[in-house]
Length: 109
Image (tube, rainbow, N blue to C red):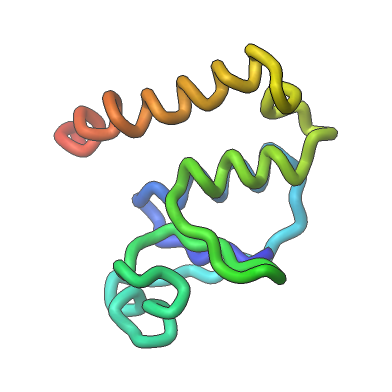
């Protein structure tokens, strides 16, 4: 797996999750200018970060990425078991953070 990471963006979530999961990954640091390139736009049509690239193709959106990483590394115990109330609470708080907290954090930043 490769993470395309732009520091001080939501891609920090994905980097943190990869580290917490103990996942093997390659890191590619990108700039604002890199995100406008045609090659990067093939990974993320809107030219945003983060993006992970894996054998099946790219995945973007930080919450989708962190949930996907948690699913790939159940031994790290970072998410509840599939079909459990605990898993639903993980989804709830991950989506709550992006819909309710991100705006305030962006204002502060």
